[in-house]
Image (cartoon, rainbow, N blue to C red; front, top):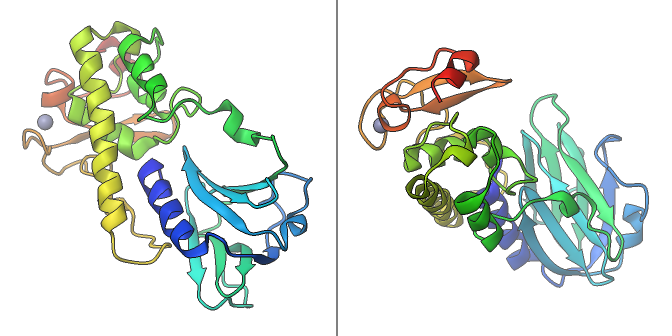
Length: 278
Ligand SMILES: [Zn+2]
């Protein structure tokens, strides 16, 4: 799933191309995509794009009439920039926003329908209202350095209400960078560990953002998996110490970690055991 670096770089690329462009048509191909009823997407036709930015994992389109469109790509959503706009409906197509020239096609790989689109009227923040601070904002520093959340670090980092923009991928990479167990409780960290957590999250995301900005290729590149140094790389050497990375099942997904750097040498067998080994 695209996380903060990918969404921010995507917003920057789209804004460079589409700022000031007038929307000529909106077409939704998927019934389940649109999460709002009013305003209708067609109401945006004729207005121009005043800015594009990201908030957490959302792409935020601001239009000249103070309406906004949010897009969430889910696990497998992608955006294609079409120059010029096409009129076909490719496989997996969810919606197309056509401008005076180019169009943006929102589509999804596979059959899982997780992407969403919201059309918000003036003053309506929709799902943005419940998002936590982004990692580079002061609110995240406050959480990392003083937060009393007793949940696992991996869970806190992925909770969009606690901090917006981090998913499984950068949670794995940041915790490895910080040398912290994914199952440590935030509330139980000492001052040094908290400082490492904050630094690691910010440095991992900064590096990823730099890499994503420099990436050559389409907006829709599906091969995002190779951007992680730890996530999804169990069996490969730890980038810090060279030991073999391990994986542990947790809830519905897997966490990749280094026993030497993160869990005092212990290999975690399952979630229950992990709790004992915190
Ligand atoms: Zn290591």
